Image (tube, rainbow, N blue to C red; front, side, top):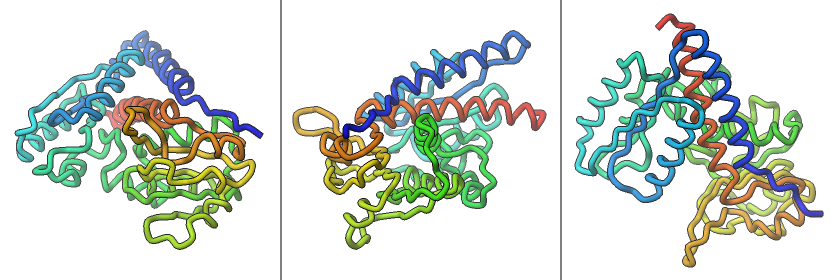
Length: 287
């Protein structure tokens, strides 16, 4: 058996093209295009690449992207003052502050300064809390993208055993909540987990988000499982790989996401979908 590779690039294009159609329909009704403020502090190379891709996707979807590229020396107070202005700007529906931030800035303070209704990354404590309480508002965009990927293959969530390897605030924990909401039985594995192999081998749906090259050997994968690899790691030769041993895992799984070209593009699509949802919610509130 050789797994079907889930093409995140194609799915992302389809979602963004759908958004463009919906935004054009809004324009014909005299409604404004959604606005997304993209804030970058410093010059982290990986962040620059991610932000460039997000800005290109905004253009494709018809979302107005307003760029704020700040020097590394920007103080936390200056960044918080900018966020306050963006929160108050009626033309801005989403505020994205690209992580990581310089060491002198507290990312939690920055994330929680963003208006929860404009928190298109979905990381604000209120939005995470709403997800936990089954009252979701804006959801973390990587989890949004992954759930879209799984639904694209008609994944039967109810009763399936989903194993999430990695418990980060940005990926692992939101994924646990999304899978619970979808009706799966969920196991979370982390650095203190004993006998990781046995948990992986029991997974109908395996999602790995750790950031360690080939952490999960392909031989551990349950035959017929669905594997979503969130990790992206740069090797010494400059190539990229995920957290799962792809070639060997592909011989056992039914579906698998590649790295690159899997979760990454879907995260961008999730961000833009959140921005679109934010403008709709703002209009419902009569803003």
